[in-house]
Length: 264
Length: 218
Ligand SMILES: Nc1ncnc2c1ncn2[C@@H]1O[C@H](COP(=O)(O)OP(=O)(O)O)[C@@H](O)[C@H]1O
Ligand SMILES: [Mg+2]
Image 1 (tube, each protein chain N blue to C red):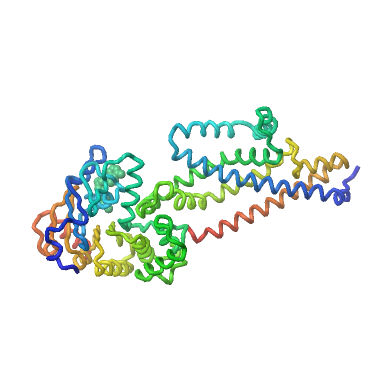
Image 2 (cartoon, rainbow over the protein chains, first blue to last red):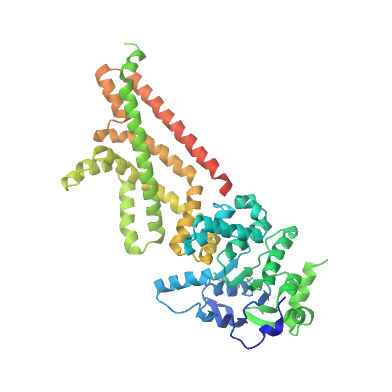
């Protein structure tokens, strides 16, 4: 875990979300969300289904563009106003710096594990086959999937697929990693192997924003926890406070229900 | 006059040459129909309206008129405007474009059926819209439409007989020539039918092989 004190100083945030607002027609899904993440920090977002967690995460790399507010990565504004073509160029470059892991893995089924990991580095960074292979081997080794490098996704378990998906994202050498319920689609016995990989990233001080329903995992790796409900951040704080001693009634209610559902 | 298959060996080389042309034209037209079909599909789905509309008109033209007429138009018609297409080329282009339109429908369905998460994953890595399409969506769409496209290719093989009307000595025309000098239509038409059938079997085998090869990639 990171030393909280170091990061809570008033240095410029690494990821800076200001007044994020998102509407689908009349439905306001995100209402004035503010979130600052320091370099190396790990933030968990929890909250009931439909509260806007995925929308917020997907706004960061512009999969679901905001309808209001600003998102910054270091000194670059992500959702800046540009003519269409220029914006496409800009966002493609920004996305290379932001790794994303989905609940349903979204591995490319027509490519082997190797093909999945090398596709973007070869296409976007111009890596040679040899260099891309080396990179893939490194990243797959890190997630414990090197032996399966020539398998197709259909030949892997859910946990293995998700580890490959993480390696695929890491191969672009991202500055931030976004996880959207990375273990929610997994059989319970496969959750741990993915959690271990994420813990490893935490130890390497990867900046991460993690949407999760796993409170104990969140508590063990995160520096900060946000509780979202109905498009607003209801409460946020360090995990020991958020999980042991939350102030807000909605947070308490959510955690009580959630823990009741999860255990015994 | 009974049947007499002993006349066949004498004309076998003509017939086999014809078979070779049929195979060549079928392969050429299949390639055109495949590449053309994919281009048409991408245009139909993603091009701006101004580009899309003329191509749609083109598709209607090719779907709504007889292939025979299209072949006449390409071979006899284009000469008048100064474009002299050799008969074999005219056959390949005519057949190819005709089936490109049909393949395009299949490819469109295939592209739309690819899971939206695939594009998202590709875009998230930084691939542009066209890059994602080319490397992620289209290969999966092709994989998924192999059986119906294979059926189209078999229809194409059968329709390649129409190319005989613009004077290409493919299988059917070769048979007619042999019949012209032997007056033995039954024998030669049966022979040619068998040859079409054998080519057909090879195409089906090839299709099954491809399907088996992409099995793991689902
Ligand atoms: N494309 C969309 N069109 C309309 N409403 C949407 C769309 N995507 C998400 N929503 C709505 O936005 C809200 C937040 O969704 P989401 O961010 O997926 O929540 P969470 O991830 O917290 O479960 C939900 O009410 C959902 O129905
Ligand atoms: Mg969600």
